[in-house]
Image 1 (cartoon, rainbow, N blue to C red):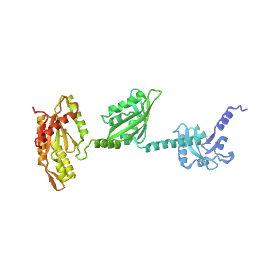
Image 2 (spheres, helix red, strand yellow):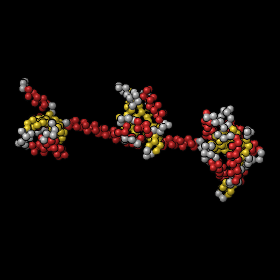
Image 3 (cartoon, rainbow, N blue to C red):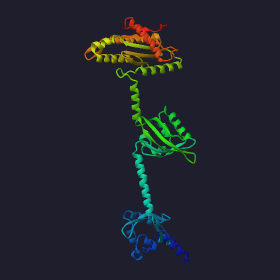
Image 4 (cartoon, one colour):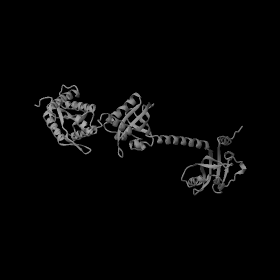
Length: 433
């Protein structure tokens, strides 16, 4: 049984894989405990006590740092000597160690005389840290390679939010840095299009309140790229402190949204004339009518236009010439009309115009100006000049109209009257007061 306390401590230290060293600074010698010697795989009589030999066992890349740290402690610039470095073992391999020590004796002028310390094997700890670092680096590299922004975000019950992790995509997606969003996400809100921000915030509030997926498509206005579309998909979880945690992804859907808009526009566009088709014309006309009624501005005139003797043009010059006539009429309509007027091709050689805020008398003047312009301007197909005229029917949209088809039917009836009366003229469905 061991009774001496110091012997007990020595055995405990040796059993922990830690060695003890004792350095005489004046003579330049150092003594090692049995545990220290065993740490590097030596027998006790194989190690010299010269301090120079001890530095030779330090890895060349660590030696200068170890010596400088030791000197700082000798000079009183640190209260404790502590350094992680590599030591060469008997078999030539290296171990990572943690050396700690302290000067325990100084002369009258403060010069170090004696220093004692410990050396502990931390190779397994360093290896674990390295593996963890590699894993962390792998995850970071993977997330940074994924298009878009991978994020972790926290939001308090009061609505204060911050992002606790963002991938490098924060720059591409929002034109911001990790530091910008670490304290608050208000800078993201500043990037969101004003028309989309209420919807964005409502979806975020609903996700936090009901713990449902946060999904939202919105526009951002970036300093270097202008208006872009973004889509956010994230899953929430409630934390013990009451905050809500999201892990999610924000992607750039600009190309997809623009393509969808183009497809939407193409479905509503007459490809030959470049004007809205019948369906799009009716939607725009009815929307305009509703807006004007709310403003108590209920004057809206609608024109139906038909190219006279269009079948004869096709029969004489061919359908390609007829197509050119359609484009010619559409171009002249754009020149004569105001920017806020609504135009459309109803099919075949028929066109329609909606004139918001215009009564029948003014609509008659506009229609006659358009009719005259068309009659006096020939359409060209290859080297052939084609003269043409149009007939126009005009109707006023009435408060009793349930939809746009009703006023179009009256304007079409007036158009029939213009045809019957000899073509190249304007006729009204209602009397002009």
